[in-house]
Length: 139
Length: 114
Image 1 (cartoon, rainbow over the protein chains, first blue to last red):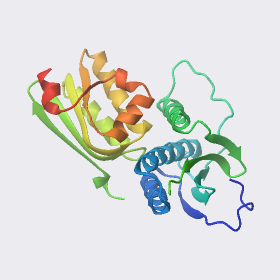
Image 2 (image 1 turned 120 degrees about the vertical axis):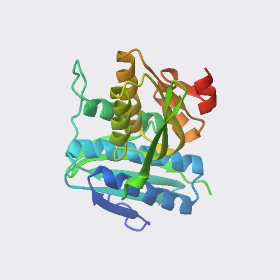
Image 3 (image 1 turned 90 degrees about the vertical axis):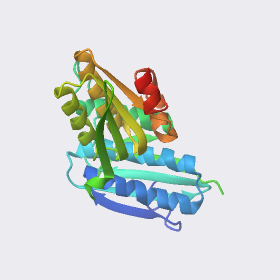
Image 4 (image 1 turned 30 degrees about the horizontal axis):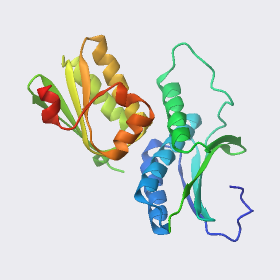
């Protein structure tokens, strides 16, 4: 989802502090839009879970500082979803003998995200990190 | 956002401490679930049943809390079982393979009778 390439399309944006208390609001925002666009309830449940995991990954990476941005872009029968912000994630999570609760949580979050959406991308960007995936809009 | 996002109530059913969970379990609310489970273990409970029938949403941080409780109970030869028939919660248990780690029952009655 490259900004500037979809200047003529609808987009829905939510900026919120990188803090756990706002993750439910992000889920609610995205599910309301997805429902309005015609996504099935099963798709919406998977999307909510993926957004929650994405926010968790970025919040842990940010140390609960700064802002996150959730962007939804409907196009070609699909809904592109992106969460960005926080800090850059390491390209490879270093292996440690005794994982901390945080490293365990991040690994589990990535596993869940990529199980739901195998094409999901987790990338470092100038504003920190970006998690993106897309879901089917069923008319 | 108010604490009503997650409601936790504990009651006794025979040998079991039944922890009824209602609401959404995510990165914000999961620490409260983890603390309540630890409180039950520290109070000497060895059989804990977590009733997830009132949970509309759970992510991997919620699972992390359940795994912490299970690990803590097993250290003391205890057990932690779940009551869950709701698809969104069953789905994440299945994705993560934790459906094979936890004993999952269809009702509190079925769990406490076993």
